Amino acid sequence: MSFKIISHRGNITGSKPSRENNPDYILEAHRLGYEVEIDVWKLSDDWYLGHDEPEYLIEEDFLLKEDLWCHAKNLEALEGLLKLGVVCFWHENDKYTLTSNGVIWTFPGYPLCKKSICVMPRRYAEQFVDLSNCMGVCTDYPSEFKKFIRS
Image (cartoon, rainbow, N blue to C red):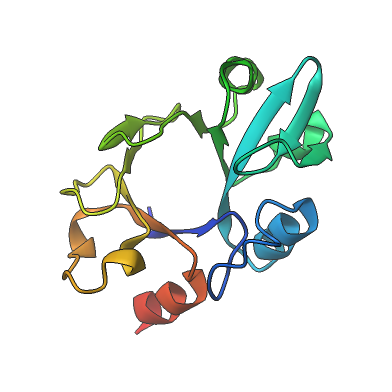
């Protein structure tokens, strides 16, 4: 299995809060070959993307795309995502969260293991993060990590 580089909310070259979780932005990152972490809400029978609140109404089929990591933002979303059988998880400030596919979503700054995704390693640039002991990263800068991994 190759090292996973996961785009955080569709970002490729840095945080762009006004575009994050926008379905077109997600698809753009996906077309570039990145796996993407998205923030998912469910209200009644409707699915939404958005970080702090449900912002973008989406069809359920959107969630069935390969290589999405769905961060459930409410209980209804978590329950619905599990029912759909997609890769999903719930966390707020937990040091470690187990995703539905058995991967450990590791909060920034905490020790990693072979089954870990290192979340936002650039945010802790003043600390050396040894990525040799994890299976990948979730970052706002996947293009930088892609260059680094190739060299």
